[in-house]
Length: 135
Image (tube, rainbow, N blue to C red; front, side, top):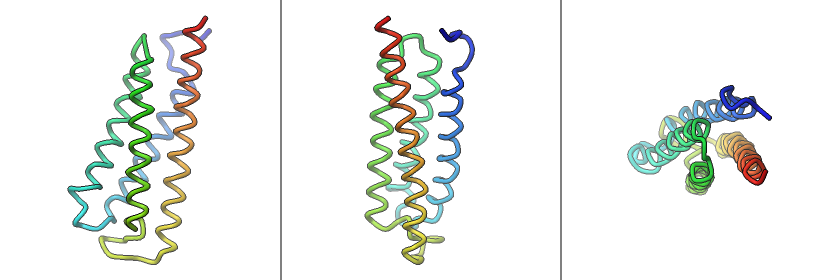
């Protein structure tokens, strides 16, 4: 059994991957259309930072069930907001103006793959905690 005082290596990896996602996504958000600066882009940033806060909270709480459920919901909200932005064509913008469609597809694939990987890691964390509470 892992020592509860030491950070879990998989948790450290999850946070590291999430920080990489946040850094990349912030770059892409800066290129979205300017009329979305205080709309969808701000909502994505708020959700992104909210998920990060729930990750930190999940690592520090003794009873994690509620926090992990909230993290799972927050992650799905982020995924849906990003999908909406993709469908609206915002990933294909550069400095607020339309760029080539290939740029948007490439950006979407990078972000989508990162979000999917983080989702799998969150799901594994939830399953591990459920197994620990059953023991």
